[in-house]
Length: 279
Image 1 (cartoon, rainbow, N blue to C red):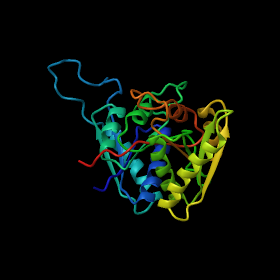
Image 2 (image 1 turned 45 degrees about the vertical axis):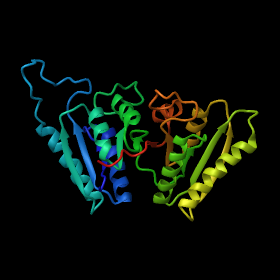
Image 3 (image 1 turned 90 degrees about the vertical axis):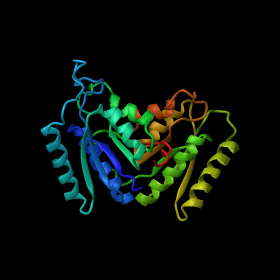
Image 4 (image 1 turned 120 degrees about the horizontal axis):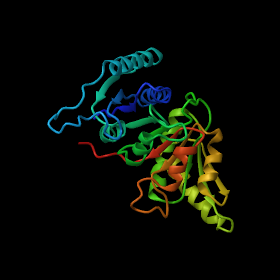
């Protein structure tokens, strides 16, 4: 199955920036790009109130024109890119989560139409980052162009989720022709040898599957892992995080470090969800 790169587009500036990132991701992966507009309100507004009206509102002409214009601009910028557009009668968050079951990657802007200015990440982005069935790329900051320089940064803590993130991070570094930086945040007094061994194991795995990849290993001593990682994203092209790290509660779909990164990172954030089995 030729899984597409899927991006949610609602016509807002952050979603159009996300569409550009998604187009670049699709080109790097040699995958088609699907522009999807879930046109019902995230909370269900727009669904008929009368219980005897079983239908849902039809797709809008404005939505169709917005999608087609966006597609035309992306194809003009990336000749050869295959783009499909689709309006879906559903809330944007739920729509993208469902699309993620069959996607190679889902891309979301950090705030779309209706997002409150005080929210660092809109409800749609939060929902998809937490519930996605494939890797989810959150575009931060919402107005930043596609990064052309900088390493791919991955936080390593020894968890299975972080191990998956290292694999995705290595692939992203190869696509960009850049360096993979593996970072472990240790508390003061922790065993330096254990931290170095943890990173060495992760680095060997990344280089074993991607010969020639340049890997840098960093041990940072700091009281809070999330704050240290945020600081490190200042010069990164991308940060890759596992969906849940060591000590994460099983009921939490997104760990505290990942939550902080999708809200505050200074570069795009890739949440390393495993792929849904092909159906």
